[in-house]
Amino acid sequence: MTESTISSTTTTTSEPEPSDSMKAFGAAHKAFRKRAGYTQEEYAPLVDYQPATVASIEQGRRFPPRAFVERAEEVLDAFGALRGVYKHVGREAGLASWFRRWADLEEQAISLYTYECRLVPGLLQTEAYARTLFDEQVPVLTDSQIEAQLAAREERQRLLVERPNTAYSFIIEEYVIQRETGGRDVTRELIEHILEITKRRNVEAQLLPMGLGAHAGMAGPIQLLETPENEWFGYCEGQRSGQFVADPKSISVLHMRYAKLRSQALSPGDSRSLLERMRGAL
Image 1 (cartoon, helix red, strand yellow):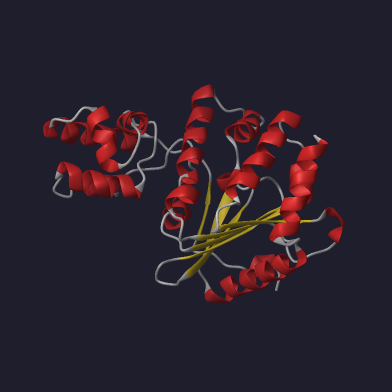
Image 2: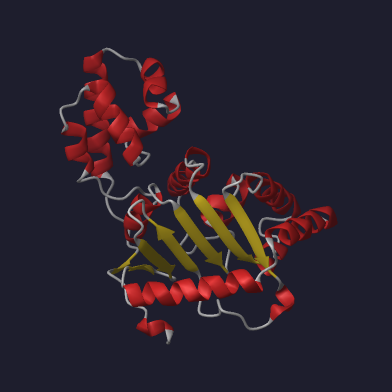
């Protein structure tokens, strides 16, 4: 089966969208918070977020996670108003519109599989590594756009901590790290971060060795997730677009490829050993 036969329910371009809807949500949330008599510092612990995050959401700079909206509804007794506004919230400056549906499912996933051959997956990136990628993006991003992208990435990375029962599997090409994106210091910090995060029982990383030759991932990156209802979805990312994959036959193909990649990659233990040797060589 060729890559062109993998169908998707959504394929759109990554053109920016306005952030007015985010500002509208922020303003509505601020009004309910003030009506309830809370300062941002008093309110933040009640919804299990930092005051800085609350401030960013109210200013329209950070996309409100679904969990935040649900907690805000309960704490502020918002009569469903915040949920209603949330339905119309467009994309964040740092989160592509064609990635939004996948990101929503990612927050609920009980299994998440990622194969990458271009860069370290976003959930495993350090701020310095991510900033290097954004600094080199073409067309050039403004400082505010870069900060928005970093904030969106940081928000997604909360999943690794907040969802300890979700099984995360990452397969990364060895040369992605050997490339030393951002320089030796950035790469050393990145390796240390991956080694630390994979100490968690639910997070597994495997390296695909450079000497392997042809393998099951030659057609490009793969992302798969399983919902609490045990439905599987896939996501394939391109230069200017993303494909959200729901067709069962296509999901089956991606599963077969990912399973083969797991068998072709180094074991998690051998991958840790290789990462430690790479760190020592920097």
